[in-house]
Image (tube, rainbow, N blue to C red; front, side):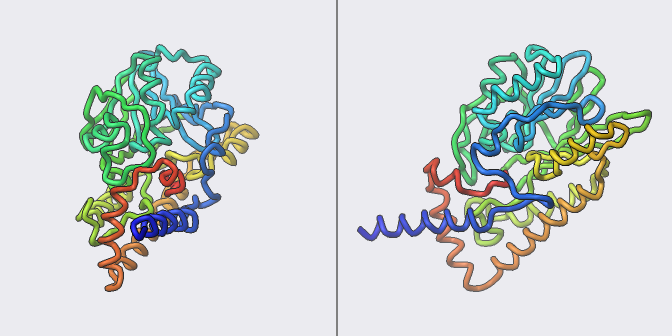
Length: 321
């Protein structure tokens, strides 16, 4: 009886923490579940970078004469939207040669397996996230909802460049949100001017994860701190991310459509604001975990969190994935 009571209280705690502490972007709250998986008109962002994702799950097609690179695939259920968007822009699925990811959570890589099967593309991922991808999300330090496992064809190292058809994309390992969270950079030319593009990785802290006294990842605080330093060193002109709400995609799309001569996606300040906001949350979590009363509770929560397998619970966890 008491076991059931404790489990029920724990589940309620996770649910309340997830809903009340749901992160927001600078200009709006992320959309939960199906609300984030609605069709959105695909468009060219800048240079050879195209938006082919849903209304909130960002997916990018980087096109080259030698084939294309697809960054993120959204939910498994996002496949029809992503495929239709790619084709609507006049590109062929079969021309996708490489599939990349920002981090291995079901709402960003859930469609990897089916997209790989449909295109024959090679899947590239960091070593930390490759384990998660190949296990379908079950072998993660903080498991969320499982997804179809996908074979990783190439392990990407920190600073490694991925080259295809004259395009170079560089991997920057920024772990914390996941074991192999990866930010990507490239350079595009628009109207005769070069712009540094950053596809920033998610830097939020998943509910139930603590920066101190957290057995599943004892040095996670130092890992986050190092990742923030890496991201702050990157020069960014064009700010993009794993969720459209992170960089106010829809508003910028409307502005770009109204006046194509001024590209609102060139937003260095937006990038700095994103990092400052997430680093502040990190510092607040660190300060909270330093409180003496938190130490014992964190150990108990961490122990229980690693045993939570229910997809239902995972759906109400942190939406900033």
